[in-house]
Length: 473
Image (cartoon, rainbow, N blue to C red):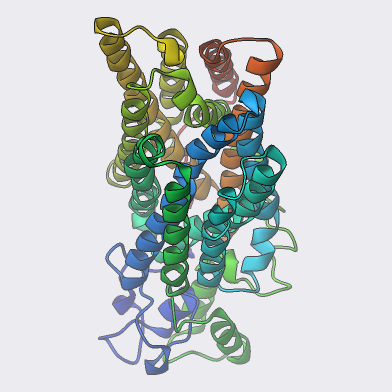
């Protein structure tokens, strides 16, 4: 009854036991046989999955540090907290607007090409920041980069789910999360330090180079497995035909299991990527994700301004590393132990607790020196560790739970929905923090306290939705 492909493609019926069957090739989005080039068999050690991880590392190495550096850049230009929050908000607004249409784009253009094109749109405009720190220009550059970010986030997570076997999906998304998080762990604090030592322009140049490096790496994923050829084979095979010795039920199963990023026009997935999603099943994961991500957007944008100079790089390093570890660990647990969805509510509670801690320890540039500064740095690092572990596990567990609750035929739609939720909340968090702090003359730590209360208020609402682990059949 299951429509999921076998985790071991060589066990399906094929004319040769030593290579994947045509059904497995169709499931990977490409043609079968020797003409297809490299194998598209899924797996965490496959060539395509490793290329995806490398491309993701380069692209997010370009994108993530700018979310902390650009607010510093506009503050340097005299735009204040409101302008700093606006750059992140506009970046995320164009990201979400792009994600709304990326599902349709992916049905016509291979996901790897979309990933490569998005990488260019993230990298090249970084050079434009160096021209001026004026707010209108900086916002326009951020909007352009947000378009590329929208393409990359949807195409990347859909490819990660598609390239892994069903029993590896949690680990695949966990490792994908590592590729997303490692650049933040290594490069965000390094970028903040480099700005203080060398200025903004060298940081912009390095960010542009990383984005351009990610473009060819992303375009090489599934190279030689064009979806249009695979779809033509499936359509011309006829209702009673088989492909390379594969029975009709197996070929149908392979086509159904293909992520909708390669669904032909006119298929049952409908004209829009969001159509037909089971809102009732997805309400709890989305609700639990929203408020903590608002806090994350606020912290990543304003910790360099809210903490003492010696505390900010250490806290950002810890936060980014903990995000990566939490996401990877949650993926490993969900695959090996089961129980997808169990981490969501506890991790949201950890995020609320840590955000409240930042409201207490944030002292800004005028924080005391000596022993008081050292204690403040330790407290900020501890809060960053708790928040990062909780947020990382929450990211992975909500995404895997949404995949499980809808099935493989909705991978692209779920990828778009999850990324739109994450990125819109990230932008709203940064915008609200800057606007509230500037409008009501509140300190940044005080706005962190507001976000902590918002996150805590969501928990009983999610509990009322009878949140429980869910497994898709």
